[in-house]
Image (tube, rainbow, N blue to C red; front, side, top):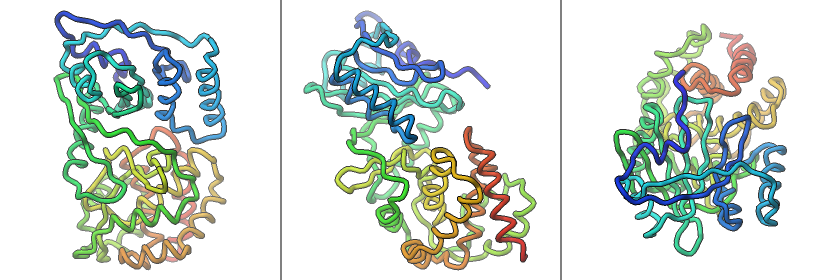
Length: 366
């Protein structure tokens, strides 16, 4: 695996010619890697903690600790960095325009997952009043730039729907690719906020013309990639079933959602599809927190999934999407998509164990 770029490379990739500005920042480390890059001033630094979507109890405690020490201006010896920025560089001029600034504004950066080849950086820009204003998602590696381009194209082409942000402006050079969004205040939903979740995914259904599952691009992609022998039992059950398509997020987990005054907005659409398979986002919302955050046992998660499939709001959604009767097969196909297409950097063993348990439970009679 190629070595991932560093956050400082965001500003060295597109150098200007003359003018420069020295920016002082504080760096929060996690597992030996830069995790958050924050302004030196307390108020914008506290605001920038919104970039950290803490989920586990330990993560929430750490975030609360960071907020406390920065609010109280306690000098705890965070690593500091001096970054010289060429103010006439094209990328920097792009940032200045977004922030409606003539001088370099306070910046904050969430450094993304350094264990993935497609690591992206999230830059928070503050307006002249010192308030968070714009989010810029930036990629430097070839894979990251490709993911940014895919998300940019999807968000510009998707019909206006609830819970889907609009791209403000994009920037591209030989070294960097970005898209920008309005900053959204809010918190992640609770893992059990199923009622508003179903309200949102219901609004994404496309009830125009049902088509066989085997004609969906996502299904064809799965069929090419799948390695499990269970697929030969699974596919004949549902491949010809006609269902409605849906706008599909692809990583519809609570940490990729902002809730503000009961309004939900989903972020990170690089896996987005205009004609997706209904149910997969719902299963992701349920299963990913259980695997990655609460570390629910396989046996307990199997029971949670069975209960989820019998919820009135899920059954209503399944009836509208015309997937009723194929719910279990769609759970299994969703898990195979995670295992053989997405190949997540975390939770793979738990996902495989869950698939095996459900396949033995649900496909045994086939």
